[in-house]
Length: 136
Image (cartoon, rainbow, N blue to C red; front, side, top):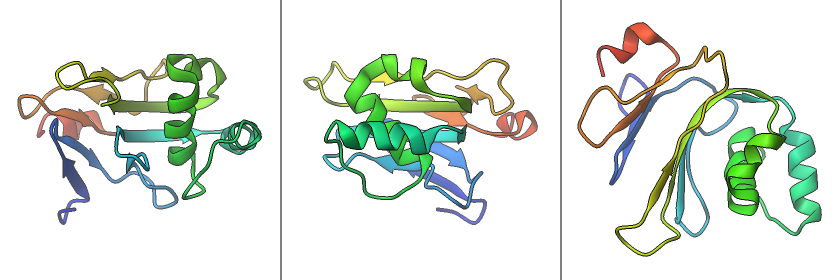
């Protein structure tokens, strides 16, 4: 993390400006097959966590970011139907063979924490402030 609170991982590189002090916003799954960049808040993450635990899913930290990555692993894109909140996120899914990886990057509408592809080629930037997005 640099002095501006930006983190980079890759490939592809994932970069975000720190938005929350209560939950990691850049997270890899335990098996390193999923990487998540997350901005926002999932209001019902405690209920989702409990539901996922009943389905034998395990967790490391306790925040909404971990619930999001576990929900995506378990339900795939259908996890969106269960989320209540305001967010933008990107998940780099490496569960397929090399060369067939997938980027999943939805956001709520209207988005106060927009996602943008501005900046370095091959990088996805998520930033809570449009003014900062112009500076990549």
